[in-house]
Image 1 (cartoon, rainbow, N blue to C red):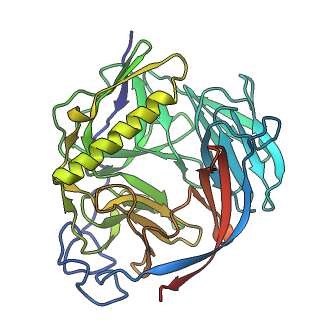
Image 2: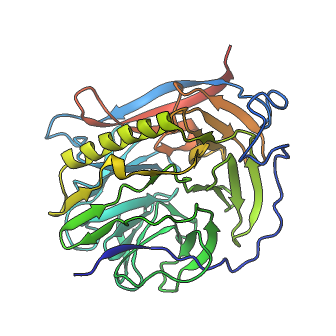
Length: 413
């Protein structure tokens, strides 16, 4: 029985990046620093300037009644198009619901089946600003036009090409991915260590390496494997630097991959065209942080087991005691670009959890301000005109999608 592996292609980039051109010249590089009180207020090298978000509710959809169109099963992703329509992908129903700016249903795209325009075992969906779709499944990717009509299918051999898992596409339709899943044991390619980000065309040509992101040196540990009907999940190492990226209007990627506070701007040729940094030092991992992470791991494992299995797959996961730890808690854990081209940079909290403040900066290195930990959070999707969509559950654990509009960001006090 073949083993499922995550392909890790680590060949060096085709283009030699030029020296870094910092967009914010700082006394510290971002991995270390003099603390949050260094520098001038209102700048990237100064303390946090807290801003409060003024929002207005637009609509919410999600019903507990089984005969309503907005009775959701498994909400995998949401996307806005340029007309402010919201596209909701429900992987349990294998369809996309297109919801208008007033919260009413416009149409349903897809549905369970194997024919053109029908979905089956879909991994994820990407919706372009014009409303066209890239629907990624096991061994195939379907392209649909803005009306939801089938255009063509791209097949992928899971033993060679692999199954591409992406949540970002360039305006010309090419996918941006750091996750290619293949069946087999001999798919690792020699080269520099790191996490490879590829541009994946959908015309049958080979993927092109865009950039190799940084990662901590590997440690000897059991890997997650999938054999037969059993997925064996290793406990893994906590506080690995998160790799996250999003697309800017000029075609560059805004990317995080560091322990310190560093946002890289990656050009279309794979070069680092600039960095955005703040002198905020990572937290050393101590006993209290380790125990807090072990407890979060236990809660995640319990939730995973309670959610059941899909496709008759049994999940076995190592216990929290097998979890290992990096020496420091990375400063950042998430990044997303809104329709105004502002970068929302999410910071970790004091115990290493994903619950810290959120900085808002521009690609030019301007600092807009910081949302407090208990303030507005980065949404699942940004839309035009300040629209933001959140995937939530109500008090009855009913899946819902809530849409708000960001009206203003005002300095606190």
